[in-house]
Image (cartoon, rainbow, N blue to C red; front, side, top):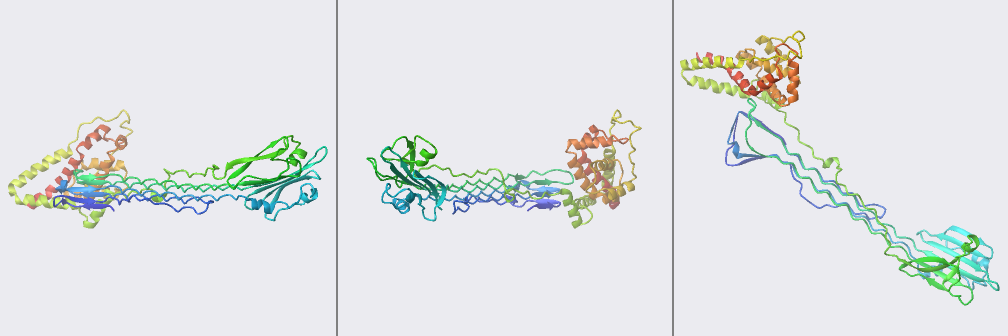
Length: 520
């Protein structure tokens, strides 16, 4: 909320008073977005904190301010809201393992590797949930196949003949590899803290003179909310274990074994000769022609120690959604404020009305003869001051007099008509400056001054604000060089030194003749 007060007098009653236009703070709270319940989806993103409310602005325009030290104005921006913590990711599912009963239910039924014959082992086909992915064979020598089920488990089925000089030996190995556990899903991205609200602005001055009043004004920007933390990622699921069954038909090394356990994966390698726990891989011997063609199993890694990094969310620290960005309150436009107050309280400016009234009452209370004499002296003195013009040097080396345009010289009535007709809010800076220069070179009677009082106040404020910018001073000086008797840059700077004082004197001086009439 903005607060604007335009009045003649402000008096602060009591010891200490406060005007608080500060924005509302958000309390620091830990909030968390929803956790994921499915390893395919990450935790929910934390919401960004809302921006702190910006402070309102204040404008106090008054001629007189009493007990201003007893007034404290607070224009602090509100603190931003903390960003939410991202939701946690979901733990990954465990992989599917295998047991000895699974192997016994899947393995081909046979009484003897030797006597059952090649055709029997070549006709093997597991249950329908297993899909064939690889197959090769050679009559009487080997059968080699691979399968995969709906859980991702893999099966390897191998039957092979190891030809000897006197007799042949038949080897079989049957492996089921458990499927891997899936990774957990990542935690949700954190929300960033909302921006702190903007601090307010204050304009506390006498609009006639530009005098500022010294008050205690506290203006601090709001603190940013804390960024939330990223959500924790879910744990990866355990891998399924591996098991194998191996068998050999005859000989001193013939035996049937289960390889592996419920807590480990299998590892294997290939050796050159038949050993107690090695079995022939017919595909490697007869197709790939490998010398090391006997598979031998060992214990692999534990199923619950497989390291699979779950992707972590990237912490957000800078990007903010629109609702977390602070928005400043609309500025108070002094020219519009003066215009609006004038429209509300009448065509005459509120400040000038009371000034005339106060001055009239003061003169009426004094001795009539003495009052008239002093007033006449004051008029003569003020006219001399206001019409005084210093000797200045023109910048003729830049623009010759022949090239310069003529400056319009107005009669008082023409000047008033020109100001009322051609001046407004959008008037260019150069024209406003010329208005101020001409104001002190043209004699105006009280009625004429009254007609343009609003424009004087309005354009004087604009002129004062514009001339605080050195670039605009140079711009006005450049425009003045284009006309005869235009002011130089140094003359403009000198003009600005006592501009407010001269302007106030001009307004007061124009009222004195009317006061003389009341005193006669």
